[in-house]
Image (cartoon, rainbow, N blue to C red):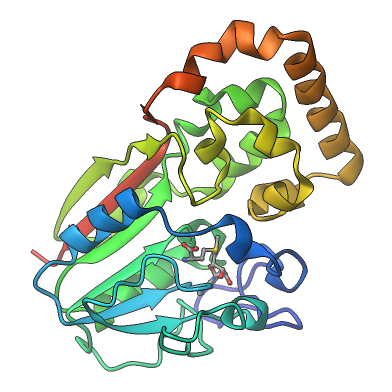
Amino acid sequence: MSTLPGTPPARSSDGSAGDADYGAIGPGYRDFRRPEARIAALIEQSLAGARTVLNVGAGAGSYESSGFEVTPVEPSAAMRAQRPAHLAPAIDAVAEDLPFADGAFDAAMTTFSVHQWSEMEQGLREMRRVTRGPVLVLTCDPDLVRDFWLYRYAPLVLDTEARRYPRIEEITRILGGRAEVTNVPIPRACTDGFNEAYYARPEMLLDPAARKACSAWSFVEPEVSARYTGHLRAELESGAWDEAYGPLRAQEDYQGSLVLISALPR
Ligand SMILES: C[S@@+](CC[C@H](N)C(=O)[O-])C[C@H]1O[C@@H](n2cnc3c(N)ncnc32)[C@H](O)[C@@H]1O
């Protein structure tokens, strides 16, 4: 979905406002994308001192801590419907046009979302406008996504990721002020099932439901996905995967493309 600069993004029938249709791929998201405690701790640490926190592209509520008064914004009805009852209901709005006053929040966050916005710059400027303190962006560095072993099996999936993720310097330039960029280690049993979360558990990517929770796979034709997973399955069965990457199975964490940006206004 793309739009003219300055105009609100087009919305799909379920309200999805980014480049992926969560009406189609959203159901079941929460079964595979549960917040990872170590990533949550890092986010919470970066939000320390805030009372009110805006969460943009909030989805099913991952990384919303009970230690803050969180206001979630989520355009997709399928994603809003998966929010657990103990979390605040999400407001139906888009990053590019946030319905809040200037400086309304102590802090803001967006996790695994910024690469999907049709007007990324406008969305980040909106986040900066409504936030007095840090704006946090959990995202992937497009220069690093192809370093993952999955590139050997599913090149178009990771080419899609590399094309969609904005460059880290672009994000920090738009947010302005003073930015800290932290590489986020991914634990071996990471509960948040993005592609790299399965670095030590390649069999997980043979599960179509696990792949559906990673939007990049939805940009690849089903026959291409079938070919990719067939190749992975064959190399797991023959032992070729383990020969090439086997030590990863025992590796406690993995330094992939995941980064946390914390941008302070000055
Ligand atoms: C991969 S999910 C991440 C959800 C949640 N933040 C998480 O970490 O699990 C991406 C989310 O971004 C939302 N999104 C896409 N485009 C958006 C936009 N323009 N404004 C706000 N949210 C958007 C999608 O609807 C989806 O819920």
